[in-house]
Image (cartoon, rainbow, N blue to C red; front, side):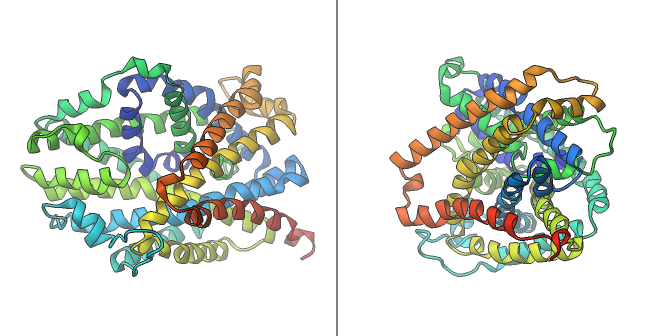
Length: 477
């Protein structure tokens, strides 16, 4: 349940529908499910197996693979902590919008309200702007929730996910049913699912599918290794991975119906085409959807509340799962109490999040997220495959997984981990590097890219070596 909660997050609601539409509509589902079963599930099985075998946090797990590989474990837990800093800020936006739904405060111009009134968006990242009080208050609430959930350890997590995993799914189903009953809903659904099979000949479509699967399943972030370390010794590893992957994919697919049925209604109500809308990222969630909510003939406030409560409950599982690996790492190496480790990381995380609560916050969020996703996570996934596939006897991990699993892994799994998945990740990485060199991301100046993109990725990499070199409590310190 915790793994499903981590995998299913805000990205399922606002990223998958847009990626699907951009890359062939219904035809995109073909490469998506190919990617899911050739990369997503095998990597999930790998991380579940390592965590279950090592029974420890990612740094300790990689240290058991070989002492010189401990830094890989620290790398995997530092990356999601950085992601959490800006992910929580998006949750703070959702928290504010949940309250704004009570009186539909965004009014007739949702775009103006979101970017100017709410975010106070500046013209460039160099112009920081002041702190936005509603966002800061939202950050306090979310970080306090994360602390309360985590500070008592895994038992508290188990109780929380029993509620926060099914509740947003139920709310999403309610929103989908409501959306499908609206005039023009089928126009949006048709736009979402109409297949353009010519897109399947485009290599970028296949890369987009692998990218979506890779990032959506919380891979290469130490999360699944950490959660798997808590599994019982006889837990079915392979089935757990398959269930987690299918739950994530199913939620993404369902979210497409939720979003595009409402978008179809919006376009019919206002008399313009869907292709004239901004249907990606924040624009979808905080501009397009609120506009559609305002046009509902009845219960607009109710359905607005449901939408943002669903986003918050989707997001909270992913948010605390990003903090759990690093607190487990601190607890494992320095024997720091779980409450103390959680408190320290939540305080650091809150102050790190403040930059995203300024007028330039959305710029920095965009820059850091792009570089962490395009380079940080891909590099970690590649290194994981190399270390576990080549520097360790991969068949031992396969045998460990097969001991407790109904679905037995064969040598095909070894091939995917050692050859196929690294090949895809290397191509994604090369294309990302070439694209960013030839065309600076977002048109930002080179020093902004350096400050918000390159330095965080390189800094995390170097810090992982520093943490490895510092002696732990069991080593006499």
